Length: 225
Image (cartoon, rainbow, N blue to C red; front, top):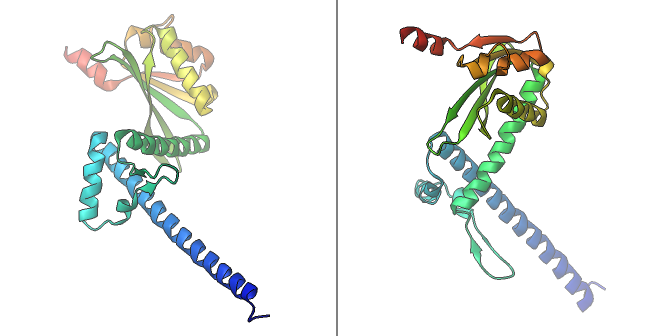
C-alpha cells in the first residue's frame, strides 16, 4: 500500500499542508509584530503631538534604524491584487481608536477599583467659537493618587444645565455612580459654583456629600488681579 500512487499523494498532501500551516503562522506572526510596532509608533506620535501624516516618515526611519517588524505592515488583497500598507492618516486614526479603547478600558477598571473619585472640570471656547468642556478625574488606587484626563466634550451651549447633562451622560457611559463623587473642582465662575443653579450646586443636589472646591490657581489670579 505504501508504494501506491494514492498513498504517496496523500503523504505529499499532508506534508504540504504542514508547510502551508507553518508558513501561514510565520506570516501571521510577522504581521502581528508589525501591528504592535505601528501601535507603539502611533502612541509615541500622540504623546509628542505629531501630526498623523508623519507616520509614513516615522515608519521609514524605523526601518532604516533596524526595526524590520514595522516594514511588514502591508498585505496583498487576494481579489484585486492591490497592496495595502496602512500608512495613510486614516489608517493612523484606526490605530488611535484601538489605543483609546484600551486606555478607556484601563481607566474604567481603575475607577471601579477606587472607592471614591473627584471631578475636575473647565469650560472654554476654542478659535471656532465652539464650546468645550475638559474633564479630569482624580482618585486613589492602592495608596497612590491618580489624575487622569477623561474627555473633551463639545457642548451645545454654556449654561450650567447643559454642562451637567454632558457630565451625567459621560458618567453613564463610563458606568460611574454619583454616590462615589466626593469632590468638584472648577474655575469658580458663576456658571460652575452659582448657589442656585451652578454646576456644582446641581451635582451636590444629587450627592450632598460632594465638596465644591474653587481652583487655587484661579483664586490666585483673581486676587492678584
